[in-house]
Length: 463
Image (tube, rainbow, N blue to C red):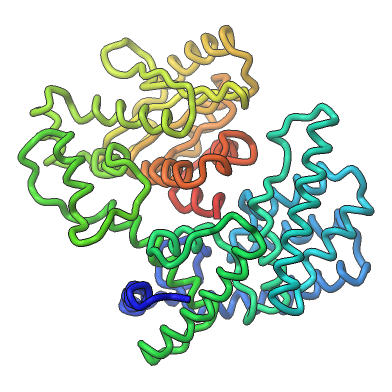
């Protein structure tokens, strides 16, 4: 299925993966590291000892649907090796059961769909049949007067079903990861045609072809898990390179520096969906000396430019934004409102060469959060207000400050956002604007718990 140019590019990526330092510690599936034997052994153990026995009990009728759904959730919370806790896994599962008009029919349809297929033709049929069922119950939900944003997304079906198929036969059925699809598209190996069943079969067949190709070219054994690791490593390292590569000295303005970001990968077309004005944010957050000078030549400061670009990121994501920032008194740097989802974000941008320590600004933060929250609630019908601090990195001792802000203000949660997470969110939104929402089945999930928010958290939600 692959031509010679595609094979050559794929082999280059496989060699990059093999050349990376060995990683012996078991890590979550989305971390930007080289993963191989330890993770795979752990996943197989969880499959054989926990997931497969549970799935067999459900398919045999020994346990009910609700209990099965709850136990699957528990296992994946304790073993974050598949990204099933994200919007296409457990969240999709919850919505299907919630929206289904009859528990008996839902149980029947689910069992028929997640039972491991006998061959590729049956697999394609199962995907299409379950997608038809999900579409039907979603339409019924809306017809009954409910919000269509509460419907399970049909595009989640291939990931959801292939997860359960892999539990039953991990040597045959690859999980339909968003990251793998994106990397295959970025590398020009394959693009989805929009037919869920046929797309999954093509996805599976290309995995099998790559496994043979990589084994032939490298002399190393490759299975479906290893192909998955290659794509995860490529996606993660590609993102990591943008954050850590040393740049040449800047001679011009910030806008010229942004243009440089585009032209650096000489010899190939750009792969990233992230606009240069967003991809430069991590360097800005670290108080890059060259960018300080570039900002001065542009007639501004790096702090002001950083705020402006963060505001642009929220605009790209789809929020109604208002940039407040420096020179406007004791106010946060900006506000982002999701009107349809009835929540708002109050945010501050903090440039730091090292870790940002919350304790230094707590009193001022509490004051302007209180005034801004009152203003937002007076003008908007909001259920939740979240406070975000966006910076390069954060000191670990933030728990007391977060508790204090939550107790003394009206904000629901306080989230410390590593700026790379913003870059990941923009990338995800531009890749799949219809699938990635601002609501409870999308980005709002990232703000619904206080603490640290990293790029890895974003990747795991949108896996």
